[in-house]
Length: 296
Image (cartoon, rainbow, N blue to C red):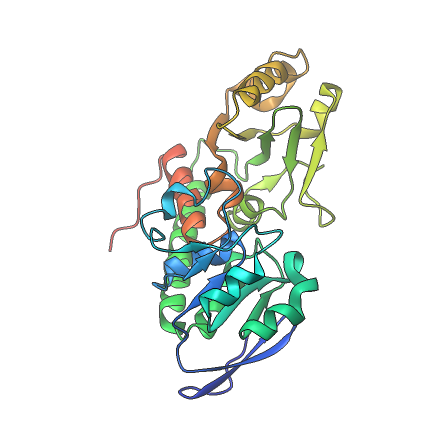
């Protein structure tokens, strides 16, 4: 859990690689994973440097306006340290999962905050709120999220015509295989918080996704509802999706029989990783399930 040990002058931020002292409000931050970039923008802090997006490069479309003057500092898996040095950052936000081996090198450039989990957007929001001296903004964003999720749960669980909770599978189609995402993925964590259940195979703490090659594995994804995301930049993905859903086993699955299959944006549901992306997933779910938004 993040802690703040002083209010105005120097804050000691406890994170997954130790502790970092930050004085004042950082002005030149660099974010080294997608969820941190999303979170910085949500907090009203525009990074001077970010890593390249996984798809729709160099930056996801929903962040392009905010990041139009931001430099790209390499890949999330391999940030360019020379570019980092040139930007003269006063804070770097990194991921233990991606950047643990770079700890000493990054720390020599600027103070660094390491996040334990790249998909835990609430932890990212809390820790970055502390580090960036934006605690109140982070608290407000989280409070708004909690109000919206509670409203969604109450509406769906009270519907007489709905068998709640709904069992779901998150299906990410690639050009040559299918990935079943678990409850530990970004959208998996969000759906769990909302009260959805995961198909038994995906209800695990052991992995983020399973790569399925053979269509004979289709029974493992069986669930009431499918949320399907396709990598639209590649036409081969659409062809692969058609091949899977035209297989006889696909037609036996509960979601296929009931028609409860929803295509959603892969960037938002799988790659965004922050509070903005989380709210966009919630927007999709409000629309899919015809939940009226909260009124002020």
